[in-house]
Amino acid sequence: MFEELTDRDIYDRAISAEKPAVVVFYKPGNEKNQEVFQLLSKFQVMYGDRVNFFSMNAEENTTPEDLGIFYFPTVLYFRDTMELERHDYTPTEEEVEVAIRRLLRL
Image 1 (cartoon, one colour):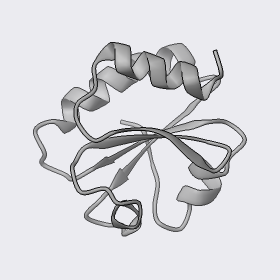
Image 2: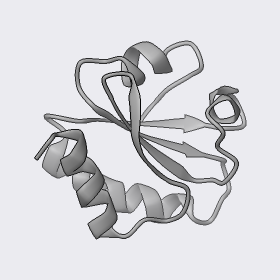
Image 3: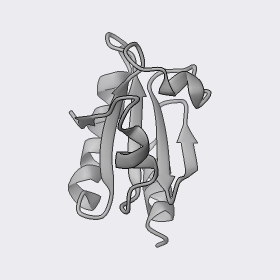
Image 4: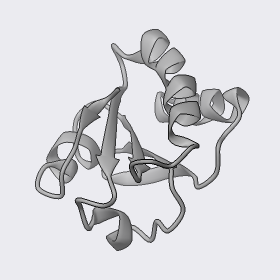
């Protein structure tokens, strides 16, 4: 599992942090969660030194609603205070690779 964010720390630790960030917004008990976390774990191994990977429980925080997230799990990709990509569905490995490469400007 990725390091958990809260409403209090998402801006400092993910959105405006020096390193780009991938954040999974999830609701506990959703059958798709495990699939998304397993997929992103592969990329955490490959890019974890250059990209931070986080998760946020949508039932305990209001940030997902503030960001217009209504499907779970949803993956957002942040760099320099901007959302560069959003997957509000279970992405393919190729879609994640493209998004992370965009985060890293590769």
